[in-house]
Length: 394
Ligand SMILES: [Fe+2]
Image (cartoon, protein in one colour):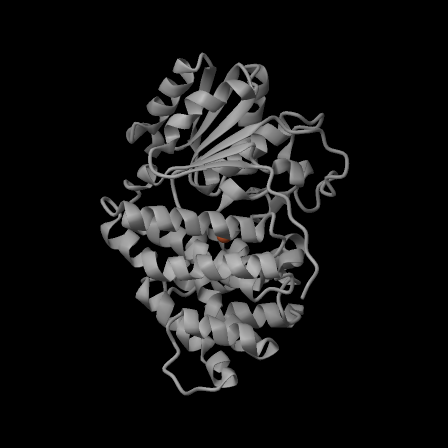
């Protein structure tokens, strides 16, 4: 058993209709909030107005940044941070999917630092060790997708517009102060977003389950998260506008995945490390960027832990009975393939806009910004192995 530790400093409010709790809790975080909302959608759905109305009822002033794009860029985060400071805000509220929640975390962190450029804190930056950082401003996350698990992690991800890398910044102080996980807010998520976010949940749980850092705490949560995805993602994609049970269970699966890769201290592996470089180059939806690597990755790693890979095959519905543990483990890549097909996520890198010429810079990016994640894999990945995995996924 790997030794492990965990803390869970975020207060979670989970369940249908819980958005209303914002009115109760907001005043504790300050007099003025900055709402960081996903571009276009949050206003169109009326969510920005609902959040604003709750803050108003609570006597909390607010300003709105509602131009948060998918895969938030360094230049935008810096600009939004300056606005937070200029407008004397006290805390941020992320409203949307992972990009909005990550932006809220990034702004709250940067605004509290002497050097407010996000590039200083990403891999290669002058303060990337995050050793002497000031305590960030508080963050409230309101998740409207079931995907990144950002509502339950100490991470934000930023797209570096110079290098096209997509590094993450993680620190214990980056845990949200509070997270509201209300599946009613997820009913209007379109099927394509439900799909790409839902498959991200699956990867967080699956990768953490076969990661070097897996521990008894994360094993239980990862297995539970995977089983929920297998049971409810299809329903959420097909009937997501009315099926509140499917939405609630996917929201719960996403939260569990966040805990697993965050405070649970397991983490993702080469699949996410390579997926981030695809996202940095192409801007493709994050969840889909891992799909091309899943099968070749399992082909390379299943022998490293027969028991866990056999269990994956069972969870993925690939146990036809009468097979040894080893035979089951050997079937994990095929079981993974069927799961990707089932959720219509069996994409190749070229489908996401990757060209042959991008493989070299993407390989550089994996080692310069995602080496820690890569090294969490059960087998070691040298440069040649990464290039091979890229080619297998093309
Ligand atoms: Fe992810």
